[in-house]
Image 1 (tube, rainbow, N blue to C red):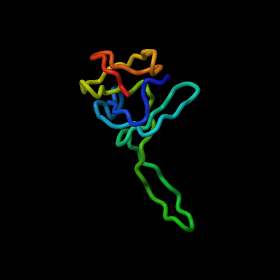
Image 2: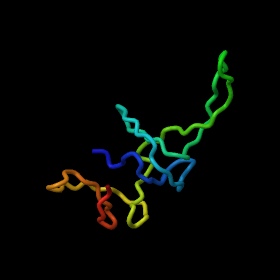
Image 3: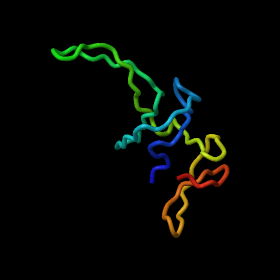
Image 4: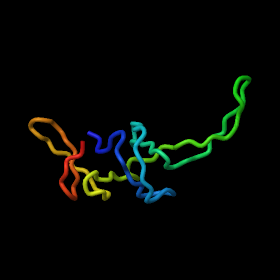
Length: 105
């Protein structure tokens, strides 16, 4: 089970956008490592070649980050926290904040 999901609020803990917050837009699974795309974080310039129908140019897009470089922000305490997975009898596996113990939905 992944400890981060789509639409979770995370903070970047490594890289050029360190300490910036954003929402997970997409999770990209891979063989070696899992990548995440965070809204408004890790913006890069992408060059598009012109075609007959569309003009070319430079556009700004969000590039993927390694999942190890982001940390979940707890919805209750509002601090970056590690996540633990609890096996609850009724609901199955649930995520919880290690700092405050609050369940994360």
